[in-house]
Length: 99
Image (cartoon, rainbow, N blue to C red; front, side, top):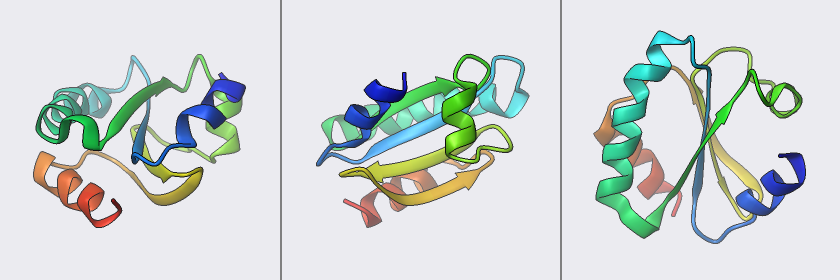
């Protein structure tokens, strides 16, 4: 995943990475919110979910200490990050600020 990850975040289109875990309750609450964000923004955003249990090295590299943690990238640059659940409009506003 590490080599693919570098290619994924090297994009003109903002890429929102959702570090999650299957056992995480808030992660399950966030999943439908991310789907709504994608449905609304369509090609203006890429949303990638990364399971921290299956990708521990990547989670460690980005110092993910809690889940869910979302990190927004564009052209390999980290633009924003936050742990916890955000509502759809809050996420859309953040993404729109970094286009």
